[in-house]
Image 1 (cartoon, rainbow, N blue to C red):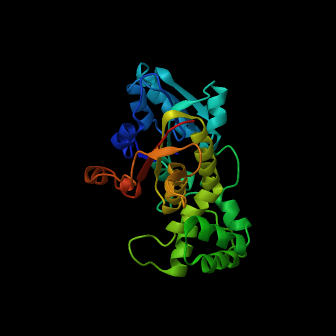
Image 2: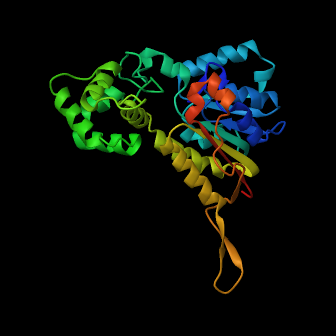
Length: 312
């Protein structure tokens, strides 16, 4: 899901600049959201395949596009996951593309609507599904997985230091009463571990559950592997992350393809890395400028990384 505030996508100018949009170029926005980034790509003459799994987002985009038909004429929309971007591009007849954008995380509309169950600041059903048409909910995981599995989820996807303690306490408590709402779970965790510092103590657990419900790590890994395979020579791959976990995956994946020159014992050197070979467009992660931080506090954790494929 694109992580934007209404129609204010995060790191907009930095992302569009780094993508180096070509007129009539083919671009995939794997996390369409409210089409904030896509609108700018289209305005520069690019053609976009926009992918999202959230029906609500797709309905909003249809309304936005209806209000600006000239700009959105070259947008094709597909319901799906960004992990399916290669298949969806193939179905459209796009074998190779000029650029791919992934804007990961949760959109502001998703966070702001209590009924979606993403936020512990608003009481709502413990849902967290980006695609509400099916699949397991956060309540299914919280009430159904054993303490060992919950520990793994909280530790691996939330980097929660008290994963064992929280998982065991949840397993004991739900034997008496199921967890049904976001505030029930958030308040339970707060009573258990107490509050220290600025972050709510349930933050990491909620992140972990959201990632587990939506298979975010699996989707990201598939999108990176498939995405880089369909980029043209000179094509660019831009990814915006909001958690250290996803940023590390992107950083390592990009670094492997950028590779490095290694000195040979017999003299000379050779390039070592994963194919296709790429160069870094951003030397280090790009972060939001002070002006954007003031306008949109949610951009504080955003990091943009971009590479360009050399030959593919």
